[in-house]
Length: 186
Image (cartoon, one colour):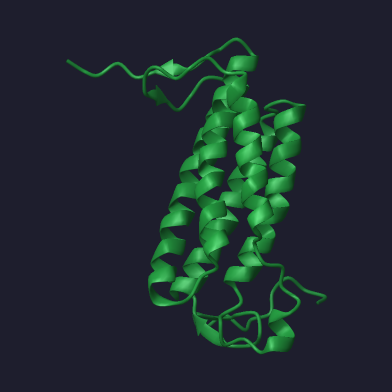
């Protein structure tokens, strides 16, 4: 590919992996588009320098999200030869997220109140990434109601938002900023 533009989508459709053309507002396109947004928001969180240990986890997650997006862009009807080249989300990816959650959470004070997104630039950016991942999860759930989706993919995206919440708390805690707790309006 020598140019970024192909003009093939000028009519409002796009190609899925395997060659099928669908509208750009197709549920599958919405789902992998939301995953792309989530990946970009994690990139922005990394740019906010949340710390080297957190950055290493986020770097791995970004690669997994790209693979996850490719899996979503491959419909069940894709030719087997095309689908065979697409990585699939595996149970090990979910287990790794759970280990990361446990590792970072063990170093945090217990959560005793609801917290508001904020704190340090890194913590705030991780909270934004968490909400973007939750939106991606909703779009994937919508797709899964209409078309088969790998259950490990759903588990991964759910666990990822949990991880981002814990990483936001960790980024704030490590700088001494701590959590921003919610005080209900009276």
